[in-house]
Every structure is written in C-alpha cells, then in structure tokens.
Image (tube, rainbow over all chains, first blue to last red):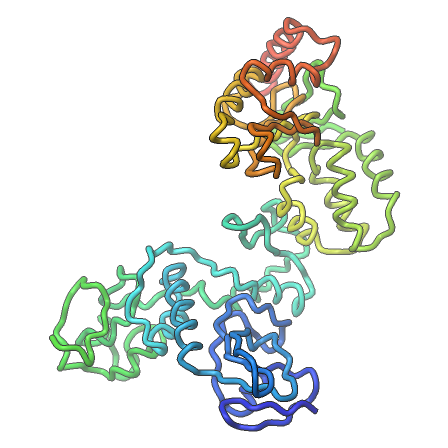
Length: 246
Length: 209
C-alpha cells in the first residue's frame, strides 16, 4: 500500500487511489469543477492542481490531483502559495468565461480573486466534459459529445439533431457546474460578483437569512447581512474593499 | 430513393462531375442513393468491427465520397457499436475529414509566414479567380476544393501549393493556371464548364423555386 504525505500528514492508501481521494479522506478540501465521484476523472478543469514532489529530492510539480494515482514517498501540498496562484489564475479565467456561474463566483470569493483582468465572454460552457461523461458513463446513452477542435470545440449532439439515444433525462443539466441562474445582485453587470462583500444592504433580494432566491454565496456568508463599514458604490467594478483604505 | 423537405429537392449533381452523385434535401442534408449506400457498405465490410479502425474507415470513406456522408456515419456507428457522437467527434476534429462535400482535387494553399512573405495571398487570389470562387471552398462542378493551410513544412519552396498531396513549389500568379489545368478534366473545355454551370443554375432555381 502506498504511503504518501499530504500537507505533512502521512497516510496509507490502497493502490489505485487518487491523491484527490486521499486528500478528501483526510478532510483536506481540494476545489474541483470537472470531478464527480461517479465518473472517470478528466483532469479538464485543472482546479485540483496540487504541488507534488516525489521523494525528498527533485523539483515539485503542479499536477491534477483528480487523476494522479497516489504513490509511495509522494509529498503533496494542496494549498501552497504556488498552488494558490495557479488556482487564482484559473478561477479568473473561468470567471471571464462564465460570469453567471454561482459555483465559479463562490470559488472566486473563496480564493480571493478580487479582479478579473479578462473580457467577459458570457459563455455557457467551460468544457469540463461532465455532461458528456455523465451521459456516457452513468446514463449509458452517449447522446452528446465534443465536436470540433481548438477554439471551436463545443459540446454538441451529432449533426445537431437529437438522437434517439437521448432519453431527455436531464442528467447533463443536473451535473453542469455553470448553467445556472445568477444571483441578480447589485453588480449584476460586473464580471466578478464579490458583490455582497461591497454592498449594504447585501443584496436587493434579501430575506431573513437568505440573500436572494439562490442560496447565499460564499461571499455573502462571509459578509454577513450588513456591512456598515463599506460605502455603497453602485455600478462600480466589483472590488473587495475590506482591508483597503477608502 | 427520393427525399426532400417541404417537397423541395435540390440537385447538387452537375455535368462533368465525376464524383459519385448525391442528392440533397432543401435543408442541406445530403441524401445518398442506394448504389452509394452499397458502396459505403462494401467499404465498411473491409474492416473488423473494432473501434480502433474508426479513423482508417473514415479515411476510406472520405477518399471515396470526398466527404463523410451522414448516413454512412450512422451506419458506421451502428456497425462498430459505438455512440454516433464518438464518430462525430473524430469526424469534426480532423481537418482531413469534411462533413460537406469536397471537390475531387484538394488545393491546399499555404499561407504560412514564409509563403505569405513570398506572395502566397496573390497566388491564392489567382487560384480563386481561376476557379471562380469568392472565398476558399468548393467549386460548383465539385472538381476542386481550395483550402488555406498554415505551414506545410517546406518553407524553402515558398510560395507552395499542395494539390492532392503533390507539392507545387515556387508558384507565381502566371503558373497557377498551368498547375490547375493538370487536374482539370481532359475532355472538358472552358465552354463546356460554363454551359454546365449555366444549366446547373437553371436546375437549381427551377427546383428550389
């Protein structure tokens, strides 16, 4: 049984267990967008990158934990500065691709991505391939797949016609991490949400404990219902002001 | 086999078109004739029903029909017992495959840096004028498909044009016609082409209208 070290904790795992599974077994969170326990790992989103060193010597590498089998003498750091920088960049790119996804906005809040330097594209797909794998591996249908190449790659039905293989089960929609309605908070037009951190009252649609019709996002939870210390800047580019001088 | 959408039948076949004929519906989906389906089946029959043969089969279909007909891809998926999306994924990934009919001869005009500097855009212009094309694509008589490619890896021969895997080096505008004439149908004079195109226009308008 391979014995590896994750964030300084030694752990014995069965052969074939991935680093992601080992870390989650230890209760160490690793963010993912393209991973699901019931599906084969795709290492598409790269959010689960961890810093890995084999043995005591040699350089550490950034590797996708979801498809990395645990090996003997592996030294893994799941949240080092290098990993955080890599994830922040990825999240920034994802925010630019799909600003409407609450999951991505939550990740942005959690990882302190306070600005998005890229132009928002408002795509409805990050090409994580979850829907394709769900359709193929769990629903045994294989009705959708990737088509095209490079910038033209997209999830598509063959010949853009609904196949009889598609039973309209909706599993692809269920598992999609990005096609969801966005919290129409005060800075709805800004690429990066983080809005609840800036604004008081926190959201337009605020109820007793939930801020809008969706669950409160991570940023809202952090901010609490009211932020009297933050001045309201309507239509401003969403920037987290906490900790900064005003 | 007659097929059409809203009773419209567009005839894509043109005089002088030596590639297998195919008819299409108004929606643009090409429909195969029985003979073509038999030809396709004989191609499919040459291979074991293994997923590993997918690309080889697709190449043979492309070489025979000059494109990948939808009906044949459906048959192929059924025969290999793989989802159609897997076939579609491969067919749309590689540039050597096409889902719309291509011409009998493929003219690949290199627009890489070296070729660009040595005048490839002018060569491309001349080829397009010569084939009466507005933009890279397939000619009306389906003899030629003009594609622009990046680098074919022989920059010393720039500007370079590949026709059916044969490389024509150091092209100039003046040489274009001579190169293309090698691939034109021997018996076909320019007048015949023109009259065929005219007739084709009439057919198309009559049947669509």
